Amino acid sequence: MKRFTAAIIGLGQIGQNYDYGNSDGSYILTHAHGFTYHAGFELIAAVDIDGAKRARFESKFKKPSFQSIDMMFQSFLPDIIAIAVPTEDHFKIFKEVIKFKPLSIICEKPIAKKIEDGKTMTEMAKVANCTLLVNYIRRFEPGVLSLKRMIHNDEIGQIYKGIVWYSKGILNNGSHFIDLLLFLLGKSSNIRIINKGRMWAGIDPEPDVVINFGNAEIFFLSGTEEYFSIGDMELIGVGGKIKYCNFGNQICIKKSEQDTVFSDYSILSKEDSVITNDMNRYQWHVLDHLYRHLTEKNPLNSNGQTAMETFKIINSIFRKGGYDV
Image 1: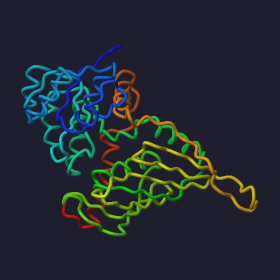
Image 2: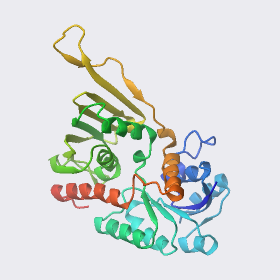
Image 3: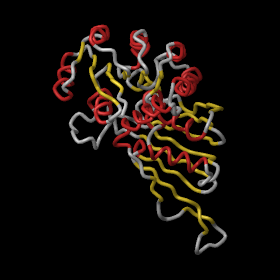
């Protein structure tokens, strides 16, 4: 089996922390665990300016870490680079990395802080013949792929309306659902802000907004992160209802059926049909798709172009709401 070498830039939550305490591969939520447990990749190094984070990485993964990108590339030339730094640093780090011509860059979402930077990153990757994967994890998760097939096969009927509850900002968490709906339902149109809401942490708007995806009108409503995190979605089709709960850890379908008592009525089934998912190992599935792209030329579900479609919607919300971001 061909193996690709890999390095991580940024050793925070998605870099190594989310599943740091797990050692059996049952949770693969970070780049560090993904590269460790997928047989097609070999984790060889990491970069972070924080010495404590580097020591934590070296203690568990037994690989070297460096204070700067240049220092790492003096010793290693990884095939794959995962950029897991804060969003405002994506563009800067991308420009530093791309000059070393890696086979692929995995960039955390959103692709960049500014839409112009995202466009430039996508163009630079194309010129360098570098695969750019933007880490919208749900496009690779088996449960979502099963749900997409069901929608495509018209098993729930045409989706015509839905609601998304999100918290922690439209860019930070809301963008996951915007990207997911683009993937499931198609192009967006007719963005309307109902309520401007507040700025989460002073940096990320939390509006109530309506966006059309395909033929469906979707209402995004913001919750308050300080009370609890929320990431739920319900979609209504002419033949049933989809429930995507707890950020995708549970996916259920209720199909319409004739009421056994009131024969003139159709109702939703009493029992849920559960779609099996693997959100506990989402980063493994991202890497598995990347591996098959690199070895078999399979198309990627999330790349610079798809990420820019999501970014354009976010940018339109920013513009319509007059947010200073």
